[in-house]
Length: 135
Image (tube, rainbow, N blue to C red; front, side, top):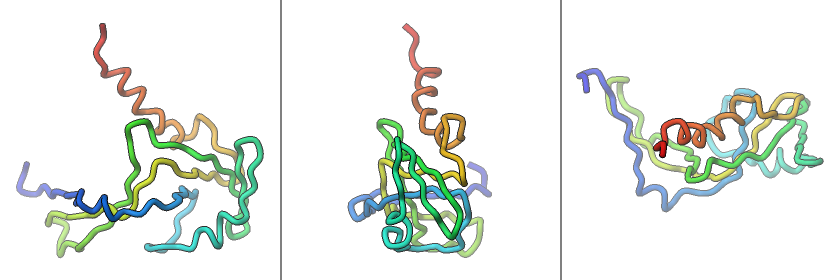
């Protein structure tokens, strides 16, 4: 490692205390960092039809799909325990939440197999096939 390299450490002992929330990936940026009352203000208006979910969020129509993490993988939400004084210092994060599936939302159109997030969920199988042992 060079002298300018910083390390980010994950405190794995925090896995025991991690909660298991419903996770939503929205097609927007929300300037909020912290818990939200998602069940109160979001999920209650979800309509499901033939594996398609729709919801209105702040007056905009969203279409969604439930996606699973690839087999053998777990999604983690990480939280920094102490902000470093400079960008040259190492960082430590803890696991605040873990999940095995999440709802992926698009603006106005349903998710398709061509969406980057949907394709990313299949990447581990493709990478394993490419890099696996050939008999």
